[in-house]
Length: 146
Image (tube, helix red, strand yellow):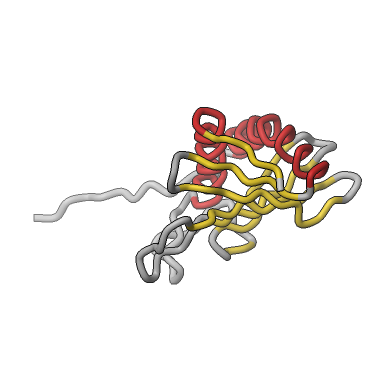
């Protein structure tokens, strides 16, 4: 007895990614402006969670920032703190995650399975994670300029 299983290939949705990038840009821009003025920004979420926001590079049409989780207590061995590098495109008003957990040059889609075990929609997922992070700091974050 055989069953016909059709594997559905992931279809990259550019319009959805651009909508997400536009929302992330609008939400990140005020934070990036604060960082430009103060040099660095720390965002506390509760007692055990803290993030640093740093401008890595500023140019007329783009700004690159790093969002990095800072451990307040000893983490489990092998556990990596969150690290995202985000490029803001001021002319297009879009924000895109360009590096996540040290992985650069995220492709729009990946074949599954693949040697590095990326999800088929890895690029969309890390940009959606950025949106969730922004929502978290809006709801529970406390800004501390350094």
